[in-house]
Image (cartoon, rainbow, N blue to C red; front, top):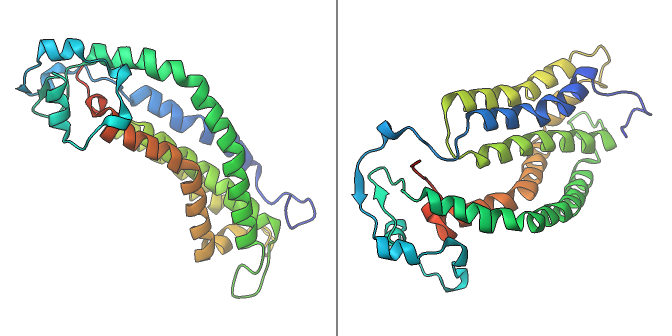
Length: 254
């Protein structure tokens, strides 16, 4: 679907990159280098305050009444539940974290899958309509148009950027190797693919990448598309780590 009567407007390298590298590499790097719980004990400082055994025994992370929660600092939240905290703000509550993951996170996997399955269609429709109605017209000062190809380029860019944004926000332990390889995965698409696409011999057919990226409307559309797809998960993580369960934001292995 493009403005050149069925002719290929992307090099084969781009298709391979999109289907393989940009849907496996960033996630693979995260799985290899990310650590849900850190077990390097020597780097942890001493406890800032000790656990209250009686309070912690009565605390059940799976029965948190979110509608009744009040505004309080993370330290107050932990002390109220008897959870000890170290001087680097990490907590010593690994058993409760596994308990919560088993009872609350894993048990709701079907509902979460259903939500994102529906959101894929709803968000996809919004993304497509936004792109088509914003870019299906003159795209540069020379008055050149690209019709559906502009829509396709913005969506392709949005998918890769969104994938990398969502991979990044899922990290629990940011580290240099993981972030470096994450950047390599992204840079294989931007700007390497654009440079390869722009190396075509025809006047406009392949140079559309540099044309659209020179247009601020195109950049704004891509950013809006990324926000539409990624914000639900980002908002959920923010609420989970800051408001609903701040005790699991940074856990020391035991």
